[in-house]
Amino acid sequence: MNSQLMEDSFRLLQADMSPIAGIQLQLSPAECERLLPVLERYNVDECRRAPLLGIYIILTLAAQRHMECTPHHPNLIRNILDGDYLYSFYLQFAVKYRELDLVAYLAPSIKKMQIRRSNGNLAEENLASGMEQFLIQERRQQSRTSKAI
Image 1 (tube, one colour):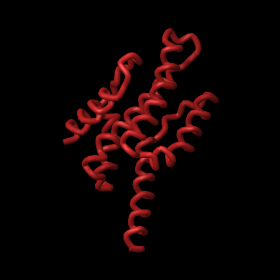
Image 2 (cartoon, rainbow, N blue to C red):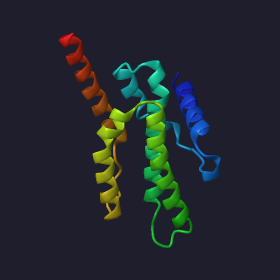
Image 3 (cartoon, rainbow, N blue to C red):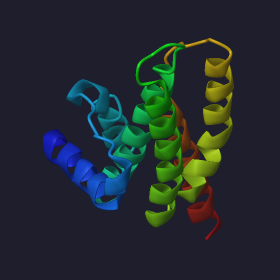
């Protein structure tokens, strides 16, 4: 099931990503699997799993590209452009799959991460944890809404 979900996510991403960008979407299964237990733990609907994993993949790849932006790196400009494109693609993809609440939730932490990295702090971020916190908040809101009805 996990490999099928990863394949489905990559297929969604490939279908929406501009071929002109020339970005290869490659993320190890181990990196993808960080989010899978979260999706299962919070019983995320099947129709949301592939897009949520897609968002995770995009953000992880964008951060990786920007982390490779070191002076005198032979692909410095390419890494900057790829990372910037992936961050804008993330927004486009999230809008398409109606994950605007997730975008709003993650925006402050993504911006803080970008600022820390621009200041030389290259510590790895736990994006899966951030998405899990969003799902917890979403579940609480749904619970309040159902109690009010």
